[in-house]
Amino acid sequence: MAAVTGLRRFMPPALIALGLAAAAGFTLSFPAIKGLGNKVRLPVFHGALTWVNLAAFTVLALVALAYLVTRRDGVYRWAEGFRWTAVPLWIVGSGLGLIAALQTWDFTGSKSSPMSVAAADPRLMAQAWIMLAGMALIALGFLVEERLWLAVGDVVFVAVAWTVLMKAVLGPGRALHPDSPVLNSDEPIIKLLFFGIVASLGVAAISTAWWIKVVREGAPGGVVDSANEPPTA
Image (cartoon, rainbow, N blue to C red; front, top):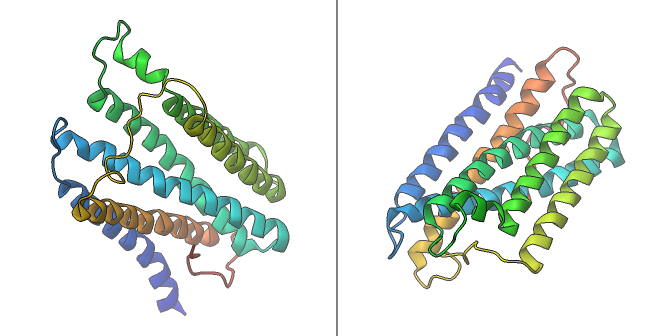
């Protein structure tokens, strides 16, 4: 039993390190492209991170819904783990997205500062609003102890996040955000490296949620549930 417990505590951080190292390797292997050179690596990494983040948001909502139905402690711990993984990840991604925009977008001919122009882009604005909503969700966890309401908050947050994002992507308005250089590429290596980053970051994200779950179960008042393995999509 002690060996199993030790393995559960060792595996998540090991997988996080492995996933991050692999993501870094795939990113640094991404070839330079005409016009941007190696600067393309940051927006490509940010794009992969966004894919993983949106998947984590979706899993958060599904696990929170599962808790509302089952009321199992172990299921709630997964929701808690994904909440504390997905929201901070989005905050980091928002910063990277802004940096990528300032470094790679074409602001030629604009009378406003690059920061002002980037901040007016619908997708970056959506990113910022989702970040603020996520911070509110985290704050709710410090104000409310009732798991039921926290799980409801998770579901509402994810629904709002997807609504805001899809409105920005599909709605009218000036968008400087370029089309994906990966999905529009005919080079197999481009797609292979991109999805390598996605898979690696996915492993790191799931392992982070798993680690948080394990730590929370070991905290005073934590409950060890039989659902100890990470969920699969």
